[in-house]
Length: 66
Image 1 (spheres, rainbow, N blue to C red):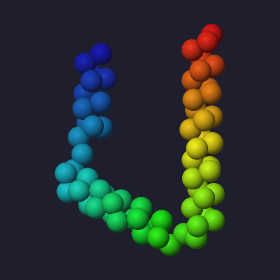
Image 2: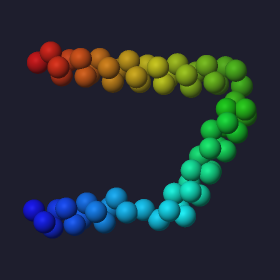
Image 3: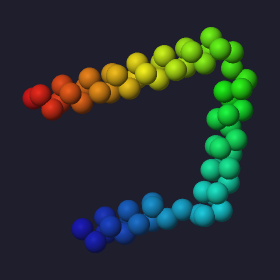
């Protein structure tokens, strides 16, 4: 099992510069995308998101009942 922990530690190590760059882009991209969308597009996106959350909650509830 020592080999499995070695593989896991290799995957979790990230380049801090790459992480910072990705975070910077993500922090800019979300608000920029939202500003570009029409109110109808934002509404549709929100509707799809809530339906996905409800579906996930429904599946988790079904699994806990069994």
